[in-house]
Image (cartoon, rainbow, N blue to C red; front, side, top):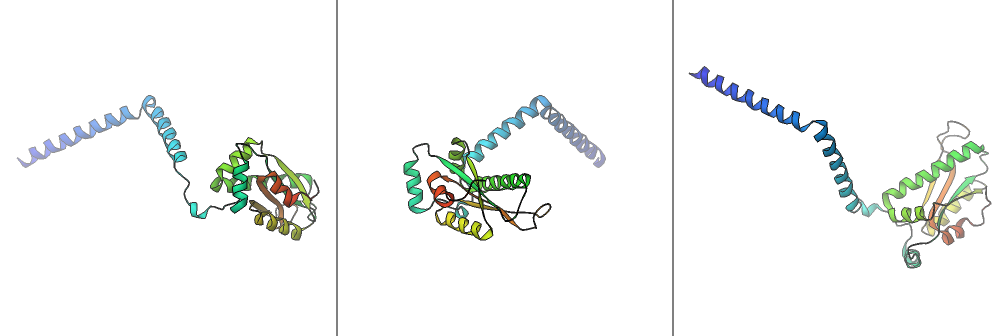
Length: 195
């Protein structure tokens, strides 16, 4: 008696497992699975874009106080924004090295702002992402420019070289200032010589 009940239970378990496998086989057919995956991805992106950014307490306010207000008031949908890349001349980098270091500065700044200042990035993109490359004499001059930019509320990013080619490891090669309102950026870097 016990063995017949056991056999019946095993048969019903096997039947249930077989039905489950059939259901999974139908569910994971490419014609069902791929559209579901795409819909899930799109839905996830919409949810991600609709929620406010996390870590708002850690966000840098690159245009604080009166500068922020002045920027917002004068920015009726469009204002000229630009980024300046300041290259140290005392390191005697070659053209290719300078180009590479400037690319690191621009993409580093962009990545940093993606985390905190989406609206500033979007406005800069609408302006065509202008970038100007200028020079400075040495590390001390670069530090002064960085400090002046930060005091004006402009974002900054400094590239520290890995030291694999022309300069020693840790050398500060390029300073990115902005993107920010053209007048503010020019007030910091306007006297620097173009590269």
